[in-house]
Amino acid sequence: MDNAQVPDAVTIDGMSENQFRTVIEAMLREGRADEAARRIKDELVFLCGEGLPLPARFRFIASQDVIVTGWDRLIRRIAELDRPGDPVTAIAMDICPAIAAASADPGRPFYETAYYTDRAWPFSTAGRSRLAQAFALPEVPWQGAFEDNDDTLGVTGLEDLHAVIAAMRKLCTAGMATAEEQRACTVGACHLAVLTHQAIRDKAMAEGLPRPMAVLVGGHGGYPAFEAAALAAVTDERWPEGAPDGQAAAPAPSPFPAPSFPVPSFPAPPLAADAPDGGPPPRSAAPGDDAEAWHLPPPGIHVTGTQLRRRLVTRESIAALENEAAPSLLQTLANRLLTPFLRKK
Image (cartoon, rainbow, N blue to C red; front, side, top):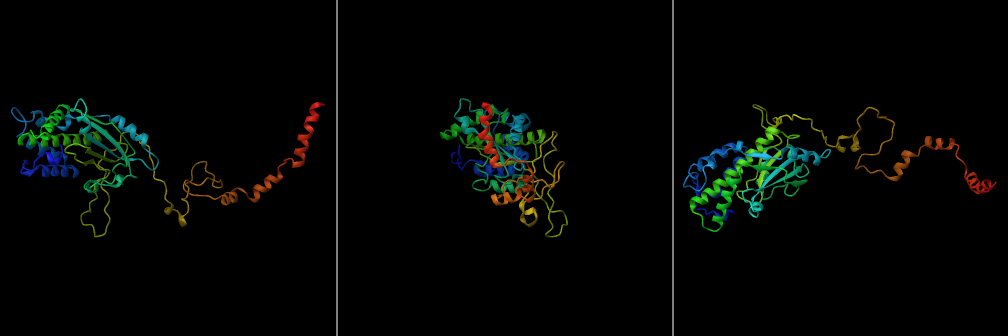
């Protein structure tokens, strides 16, 4: 159901359908998902129960009743995709009801999980406000730049409610829905999207991730197609009280709990700008490291053939070769010619 299938004449809490959806989505992007859920439940009071479009369960279900599956597999998949200096810094789960609508069971939306690194967008240093600004663009900057996508994460506990909304969407599409049913379809669909958003947020907070990262929840080809960050990698920076103008603010603590399991560290590769005269970065001393040993250059630094010969061919190496008792060319030829005769004797 797209926006055109819900007439502007349908009002929700004194707002048009489009305005109501925009307000709920803004709350999600601002980190006010619980407030959005309460506001939706205030509307469900008039839409749920006997003789009303929605079953009473819509009013009483909460995010605690929603089960997120596949979190252990998610952690393993992140570890498989991590690369030194380029770890996964964001995951996104999209609700894809368009795929479910084409299946035999429209009550089971397809959930797609995507994995991103900072090559797609600087997730690791972005707070919620910066993510909200990116979501507000006509197309998010990381569109299609995922490292991989799969169906690792799933959500259960909402199947019967998704089936109710799917049936209402068909009525709205066919122009057979009453104004009350159209209103119920909008409020109910928003409720399911917010419940999923809350469940993913709570699961990430309870189970943890290998590192602080952005957790995005959205919709692909469905309604209401909210796009928001359930969690950001860092909390938005705030100016300390009484700080003078121009003083930098320290980032607030991460919203993520400390991981309860060992996490591999992937430091970023050193930059050439950190080295003197723009040369290759200095190598740190390590046990068994010989300061006089010759090492291959790090990746990205080109060495010409002439430079390589100058490094390998020295006076000392020439003298060492001269001292070796290697046979001359005449001796080698003589040995090859005389060997067959010696064997005959």
